[in-house]
Image (cartoon, rainbow, N blue to C red; front, side, top):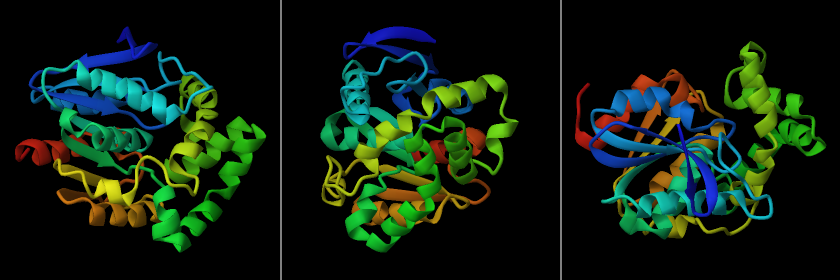
Length: 271
């Protein structure tokens, strides 16, 4: 891994592969290394750049600024230095960053592959019942998070978005990293959770004409399917894939399957 100055902040960066350029954006509570399996599987097709998002891995985070604003600024700076429009690949919060960057700078993006972009705020006006239910379903986690009960918050997060009891079977180093980064979930709230009109709306999603791949796990919370229904309906050029045997952490837990789906989307490869 390299540490570079990107958009004025120290940023952790990993490079792999050769071929068409691609930028990979990880989920919350992870870092660029989470893409290891995917990068290995796509290294013959893509020249990949995976960055640590603000506050994760080796990347600095300015708490005075919005975390998604910083993530988008860094991502766009990476895209601008590439020789050609890049394939953007994102997971969860990273997928929301990828979507926003594609909307704001479409000329820098060749395609967009998103696994469960957690723009929960889009449900607020388009499906208020689903939004209300998601707020209820996440209430226990939110209470622990707001109270600073980091371990209880991590356990609740993984029980819902990973696997039940997942925190306790993690290696100690991974537990420590999660406890260190779980407060950053609070920073995501304004960008993707609160009932507000933000920089990404269903209207401007509808203006995005680059090829898009929208993915989800069949075992993910119901809100994800309903949210992807909205995004799919808005996108003019989209394919949708459901991973039947996994949930929210599919790009990590099912990296080979994820990579096969992305290869098929980008290149028509049958592998």
